[in-house]
Structures are given as C-alpha cells and as structure tokens.
Length: 382
Ligand code: PHE
Image (cartoon, rainbow, N blue to C red; front, side, top):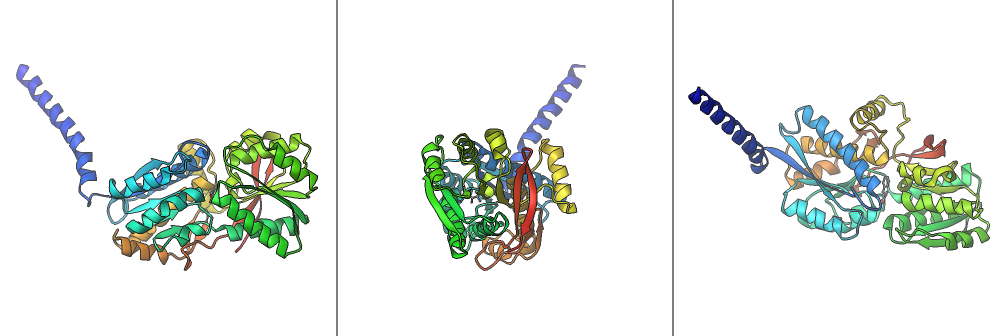
C-alpha cells in the first residue's frame, strides 16, 4: 500500500513537472511558435478601440491555430496595453521587439500612437501592421510600416461629398481635436474637398482629448449659423460635444469619421446622437456570408456584436498569417515583401490590396444613428 501510494505520488510529481516544463520549452526554442506582438489601448480614454481590436485579433489567432497554425506552427500573441497614453506605445513596441523577439507587430489604432511606435519598428526592421490608423503619415514612416484600412484623404472626401451632395449643406463648421493627428488630418482633408466644391467653412474651433466642457466652442459655432458641423474626434469627446450642442440649441446634423465607432458613443451621448452620421470601415449589418459568419462567431465568443475595430483587429491577424504563409518564412525581409504584395485578401472589412504606399484601398460605409443603433446607409468606393 505504502509503496503504491509513493509510486502514484512520483507519477504526479513527474506530470506536474512535465506540464510546467512543456510550455516553457515551447516558447523557448525560436522554432516552436511564431510570436506576434500586439499593442493596443486596452485601458484609458480610448479603451473601447483597443479592447475591441484585441478581441478580434484573439478570435482570428484562435481560428488560425485551430486550423493548424501557420507554416506548421502555432501563433503566440503577446499583447501590450498602451493605456491610451502618449509615451506608452514606444515602450510597448520596444519591449515586444527586444524582449519578446516578435516577428511582426499589430497596432495601434489611434494614429498618434502608431506614429509614435512606427519609427522604432522601422529601425528594427520588424513589420508593423496598423489595423485602423488612417492618418497618411503613419505608413510614410518607412517600408516596414503597413495598414489594412483606408486613409483620411479618402475618408475626409467621403464625408465632405456626403455633406454637399446628400445632405445638401454648404456652410459647415469644423471642430477639431488638436491633440490627435487623426483629427487634425481628417479636418484638413474634409475642409479641402468642401471648399474646392462650393462649400464654406462657417467656423473653425478646436479642443483637446480629455476636455469635458465644450460650451465656449459650441457657442461660437452656433453664432456662425452653420448648416452642419464636422466633428472628426474620438467617441468620448464626440458624445459630450453633441450632447452639449443640443443643450445649447445648436440643432444641426453632426458628421464624423471612424473615431466615433464605439458603443460608448450612444451610451454617453444618448438621444442627442440620433440622426447623426459618420463614416466607418465595417457594418455588422452587411449580409455577405463571410461577414455574417464572423459576426456570429464573435457574438458566440464575446456575447457582443463586433464594431469596426473588432473587425479590423480580426483582419489584421489573418492578413499577417496570410503573408507569413506566402513568404514561407518569418524572415523580416521576406515577410515585408509578402505583406507588400498582398492582393485581394478577403477581409471582413473588405478586400485588401496593398498599394505602393503600403496602404489598403478600400470602400467606406456611411452610417446613421437610429434608435441608438448604427444603421448602414451607403458604401462609397474609392
Ligand atoms: N482611424 C482612427 C485613427 O487613425 C482610429 C480608429 C479606427 C477609430 C477605426 C475607430 C475605428 O486614429
């Protein structure tokens, strides 16, 4: 009896040791897994962006691994939180590159944070793929920097055209977040198209990310009697601005871009967000079978409907896996070349073809907020 129990005890010890050692060996040998880094705002002012893209990325990695991985290896995702703060994105990618030795990096969403980290990835020659940064400067950093979304000269044009041709407004005020490269750029491209096509900027005003009181700017905008307001900001401030505009009696349509996309927009802005418009990368209402199966799988896993950032996160990981497969290796130069030559990759955010500037040429959706939901209105092709 004594002997037997000792034996089973030894077996148990061995099993525990084996279990403890195996995962260690797996991450140890460079051969065992393919390490992919991700940096995203999982907390802070734009936590919704990072949490959503992370969920989409994780879903994609799980699906890829369940189907056998890439080049016979499993993908190991290593994620860093940028906390929505300046300074954290560079720390995150430095750690992913030098400590974790990742083969490629997915991120960030906010253009300012991608712009902070991109020079570090470029210098280290580690391909970086931004799922959602739309400011043109991001990929101009260098030949290792890619994105899978459209850029703001297109997005700004789409919304200016929509204002002029669909809403039939000419006098549009512009309210910009000067802390975000995204907002400053999008405002500029909107203004350029508007004024070149018979429109007028009724008034220019600005604010900074994190501000809570926008009454002074809105009062000034109201006195210029605009027919609409272009508000290229992020959802937190946008919701407060539109709410305060309503309280001040500024009752004209507000228009924005992808930075509006978060369920928090309506949670914070409530009724005041009804009937407002924004452009986006994705609509979960799209009936295409690939989109509906992604929406279903996402809902099953997370019990929520994916937003654009979730869809872009999902596409970014699958886009990278496809390039690693075609490169037949994780060698940075081969991987870079494979990413650059991606053509007609079927994403849930649309077909992805990488152009000479390492951007994707894709359509945008215009959505309207109705009954607290984002309703699909029209797709605009590039
Ligand atoms: N396009 C935004 C930026 O460049 C980020 C964003 C992408 C926000 C997609 C929401 C959805 O900063």
